Amino acid sequence: MWEPNLQLTSEQFAVLLFKSRTESRRDQKLYLESLGGDGSAGELDSLVALARHDAAARTESDRLTKQWNGQHFPGTDSPSQEVCQAVHSFLHSLIAGDFGPDDSIYARSDAFLKQPYVVAQAMGVFIERLRTNRQGEVLNHDEAENHAVDYLRDHLP
Image 1 (cartoon, rainbow, N blue to C red):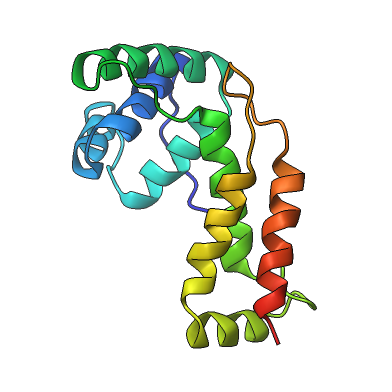
Image 2 (cartoon, one colour; image 1 turned 180 degrees about the vertical axis):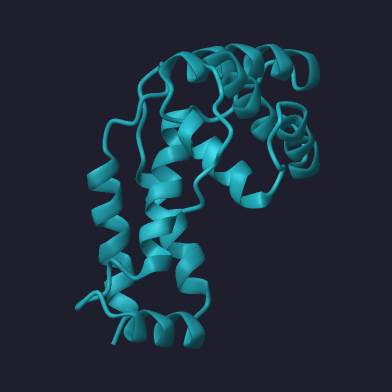
């Protein structure tokens, strides 16, 4: 992953996470440029990934997002950061080929090209199986992943 030169505070990370949920990539890059960054896609992706590991930034971003949701989509909530991270992690592993019978990129590529719906369905199986508590904390990531992998492996050669 690209290494950013820009160092952000928790407050700046919180704003960046909030913008990643509510604004366009262009606006997010402009925010980084306003802080002295280069505004590149790599810088943005790296800093958002770092921000997701800053507990204070996540808490403040959740507060800002809840307020924004109340103004734009009353009565709704966004998926928690934990749910978003669980989906991100599963999708990354799915695309990287971590779930093939021999973790083979070739078996995965062959199955995905011949049956492109398999990726979407595996993602659906994972999300439908995922469970959270009232605070949005993921309770069964591994179990949901195993359920989706079982589906996926059924379609691999």
